[in-house]
Structure formats: structure tokens, C-alpha cells
Image (cartoon, rainbow, N blue to C red):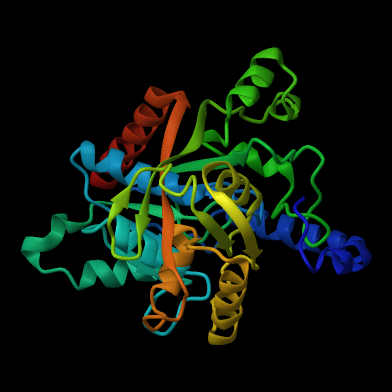
Length: 352
């Protein structure tokens, strides 16, 4: 479990609350298993999610899924809660999708089914093909919307066989819930992870009997850098440039470590996941960047969704963010066929 400012409090009160949390989750899941409170959209739904509160690299897989669906001739929309969204439905992740997947509708709201239905109701007759399937962002625990495929991501570096339930640990539900997954994807599958999987020593090899194992393995690759004007550059552009790195993501360690490998890192600032970069925070960031002597600021694509709204000159140097590509190192055809089978099967059921 990654260190967070509230971990001390969690260790103290978590064990007292954890049994109650487990009881509530179990009761809730039993109701959903019976179909209670579950609505069905008129189009196929594919959920991309995980079992923990920390980041697993979900956003790039949502985008890859949309691209695969487009290659199949489908017209996906993304439905998401939009954590900390403003009144206009803007959240850091929603803005990232809109920027990187132009033409893909992004539907934001706590009630995903309602958002899908509202969007469909607003389409004219000649626009009905504008959305013929839905990719549900972070949907594994959001069971109020029926899904035709649950894709669950496991972070290669986070051993869920020893993780505790919220609020003591980061598990949203007991590990047994993984049985609902139609496909398990192992993220951050670097070469050493593949070696451990093949040797039977990786933690996923210790998953209890009856639970699905990862059939697809992916890793995140920095394919380049983009500056604040949208200009693309090589991933090694900042190798000799004094660079300050800042992020507000679920698991910042990999981003900071890669920044250290790719750039001449002179400082870093890590904020809570989804931090809004309020004016006071942005001013503090600008001060730290300036005092570090940095000539470039490196942030994630998600963080740029908020920093791009700052007034010109609010930050003392050029801002870059890495262009992340999801490299499927194993199981690419399994991923494609599973997605194709889910939407085809669901479409056939809806026609009956």
C-alpha cells in the first residue's frame, strides 16, 4: 500500500471499521447478484475497472478499448462518474479523454445509466449510430449498470493477496469479487514481472483457486513529450534539461521514477490523487519550480487538464507531459477477441 498522509489514521481506526465495511459490501453485492437495483442500457457495455482505490493504469486501457472498438466499426462512448467534476461535467480524466479521443462522447455523472439514456434521447434519427456501445470507466464496483464484460486491471506491483479492505487497506471489496471478471489484465508488466510470472513466483500466481488469472499483460511506455502548445517532441527531449516533476495521481512512484530516468530531475512535488491545483497550490508549485532552477515542468496528462486553465505566465517555465502508450506484451489477440465477443453477443441479445 502506497504511503499517504492519512495512513497513520487508517492504521489506528481502520481495523475497527473494516468489519462493518466488509458487511456492507457483502450485503450490497448479494443484492446486485440477485439483480436488485441493476439497470440495463440498450447498447453493449464494457467495464474497465480495478479492485483497489489506487491507480492501476486504467485510463490508457479505456482509450485502447475505444480504439479497438472503432477498428471493429463500432462507435463507443465513455461513461464515467467524473470524480470531483465541476458543474459543467469537467473532471481531470474526462477532459483527458475529450482531448485525446476527439469524437468519442464522454458522459459524466454518478448515475451512468441515466447519462447514457439522456445522451441517446438527445440524438436525432440520423445520429443513432453516434453511440452503439459504452465503455464504463472505473466500473467494476459500479454494479447499478449491467455490463456485458468486466475487464479488471491488477497492478503488477501491488500484492492483493496480502492487501486489506478499506479503510485499513486499499481493497474496495474482498478478493473473491475478482470471480466476476470476464478478463483480467496485469498492468505495469515489465520484463522482470513476466519472468516472475513464468517462474510461478509472481503474486498473481498465488491467487486463490477459482479466481481468474491475468490473460493479458500490458506496460506503459513514454512514446514522446507534448508541450503546452500541443507540439510533440521526442521522449528524450529533457534528458539534459533541469526538470521539475509534479503529479496528483493514484500511484505517483512510477511517474517520478520514469521522470528521473528520462530527465535531469531537480525536484518533485506529489499531491493527493485528483488534486484540483487550486490557486494557492499552483502558486506553491510555481515557487518550488522557480527555486529549484528548473527550465521545464513535467506533469501527467491528467494533471495538465487542470494546469492548462491557469493564466498565462502562472508557471515559470514550459510545461511538458509524456505521451503514454499502452504496449500489450502478452495476450493482444485475447483482448481483441474478448471485446469483440462481448459487443457481438450483447447486440444479439438486445435484438431478441
